[in-house]
Length: 293
Image (cartoon, rainbow, N blue to C red; front, side, top):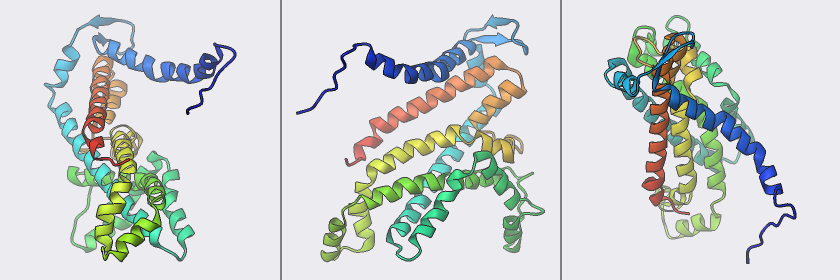
């Protein structure tokens, strides 16, 4: 039997929900509506006048080679960051779940990067991989790799992928570790008695039981790679060289605030929002079927 919360005053539930509803409307729904509206207009740089152009802003985007290149860059960047951050954090969580000595210190050191701001994470890796001063660039040179992300677009993309992955590993680690610790030890022991090896136990017991955590982190990491990495890229490469690290969210900023083309910038933000919504729907529609609750 389920108990229901009863309020003597019928307006009290709405009053309690009002702050959250107000925040959602002011900071989410209203900006989304304004972006959608603005995408159908062409405005001057000062916003004093505008002209209705219907879908011309959208048509111009899909005829722009630079914007199409940003699509490819975003997909490569997003999928790389998500795959690396989740796989590495799962490996570290499995190790932390088994380590006995200095377990607290081990977990603390792994959590620390999460407290670092994205812009600062970008600056850290910017200096580590600096061709003249960076220790990582020095090590790569010793291996025969000439590292210079100022002129090499592929190396610049690799650098921002590494920085974004390093920043996100701690967040994933916390959830994976919590999921691993919630698995009953009796299941693992029973499988070990049945002579199942560590790899088979992980594949048939552990991973299916943490699939809800994995599914949640998959969505969070994709959204992070698409949206929350703007500050990191702005602090390291500013989209360069030659737009090789200009992902969609950075291009929205560059078009609107640098290029002063507000209509095109709004159209890009609407397309990006539609992409993320569609990607999330696909994940809940198809990927969630493999989740074991």
